[in-house]
Image (cartoon, rainbow, N blue to C red):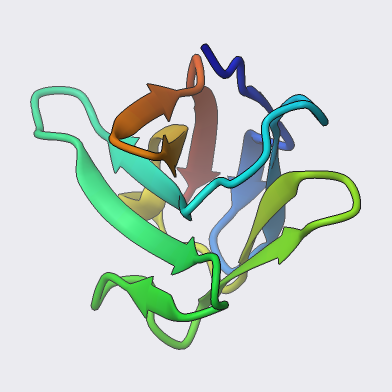
Length: 115
């Protein structure tokens, strides 16, 4: 079991920035992929961005050019830098890691962008 702890959400105005972080236990090694997903009320959970152990990144079209995903291997964390936020980015954001054949999820963190 890998317990993930997310931080950094909150309320921001349109055009503002937020940085989400997700920490895995130091004992959780060999994580193959880190990802950030989001789910708005009444909508399906969707991928925002992910990064694999080789550093290859993948972004949803809505995130390209505004969001940046990165990992800090020393701290065993993944970060999501979000710039130029829009009201449609309002959602609960979830951290996700893949370790072997298993997927683990964080508890979710609220991001609200006011217009």
